[in-house]
Length: 100
Image (cartoon, rainbow, N blue to C red; front, side, top):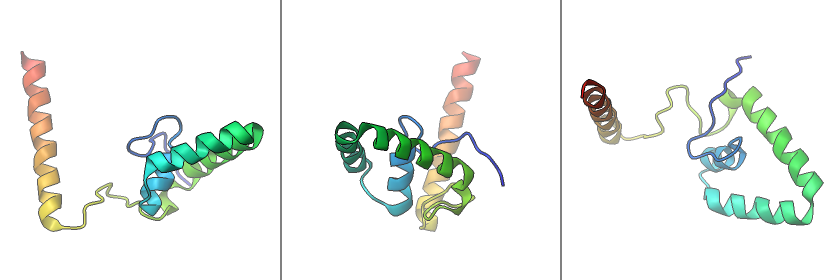
């Protein structure tokens, strides 16, 4: 078992809503709105549920559906290549900023 401190992309707090949305390809803002409604109606249950899910996400992050070890969620080789070029350009910009 490997513990990770990383959160799902686009996470706000512990990344529970973002992690669920990413794993099942749902809209994260709809989940967040549902959680806020749950929080307003059943405060204690919402907090306990969120905390439990945050712990479970940390413990079992590698086994969640929609997550891969590579971290690259693009299925097309063309899009994957574009993603790599964008990453390379971002690194070049960072290097230029650090030099100047």
